[in-house]
Each structure stands twice: as C-alpha cells, then as structure tokens.
Length: 203
Image 1: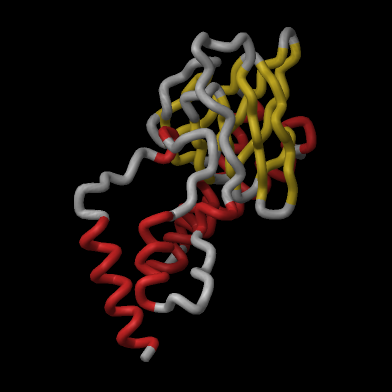
Image 2: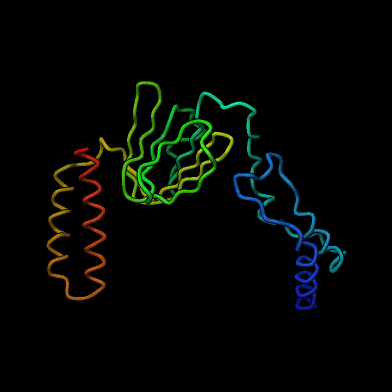
C-alpha cells in the first residue's frame, strides 16, 4: 500500500510542479510558506493521515529585503559546536573565499561562497576582530544578512606562532619523504593549512 502511495505521490507532485521553478535560496519569501503541493498530493492518497512536515516547516522566516540599503550588515558566524556571532551588526566582513578575499558590505548582492583556510575579518567601527578559519561556506543574502559557517575557527590572537612554524616544518618534511599517495595528500594538506596560518600571523 505504502509503495503504491509513494508512487502516486511522486507522480502527482511532479505533474503539479512542472511549471514551478525553484527560487534561489536568497530569494525565498520572508514569511514562511507551506508546501501546499505536497500536502494536497498527500491528502489525495492518504486522506486519513496528516501529511508529514517538510524541511521548509522548520525554517525560521527570513527578514524581508529592505527598500533601502541599511547602514549595518547583520552577521551570523557559527561552528558545528558553537556560535561565535549571532545577529551581530557590523560595518563589513572580509571572508577568505576560494576565489580570493571578498569584502561584504550592507547591500551586497546575494552570493554563496566556498571558504578556504584563511582569515575572516569582522569590522565594527575602529575595531577589527580576526579569526582563522579552516574551511566552510558563506551565504550572503539580499537583505544585508550574512551567514558564515566554518568547520573550525580560532581568534588570531590565540594562535601560537612557534607551534605554527613547528607544524609547517614537520609537514614539509613528511611531504618530502612521503611514499604513498595518501601520505603525500595528508602532508600537502598540512603544509597548505600551516602556510595559511603563517600568512595570517605575518600578514
């Protein structure tokens, strides 16, 4: 029964969504919208059971895009285990995108950027807070909100330069003596990350 129901749901949903074009993530409406197509298809097949919630039901409504460019950029900076910045209003952030350093000001065009090991700078008035991040993604929204998601991050002033130099020397030695592709790949990653750390401290 459920196998037939899933097939009917798929056909019903696909036929009703052929003319529907999925919007870019930053263009989603500010108010939450129910997945009406899925709910209607579900009720046709299983009318006695409430339809399950879809991911959109768990997404908080995004603030609408303002008619004029705001004076501040609102930043969320999160790690898998902590939230470094939550709805923090700043003047600018500079992120280490894989395409190069990218400055983000209020009113920035909607963008998704992959991050590489490097320095994330948060500018607030005359104060600049710098973090070294390993990798991640930045989501720049049209409403002057920026979400930065990193795997690892640490304030620059908490990094020990001597340990960075030691790690760079160790991984450079491992790279020169690597005998397998796996050893070479691990050593190259170590050299790349420690070189980025060294540049962050000296730059």
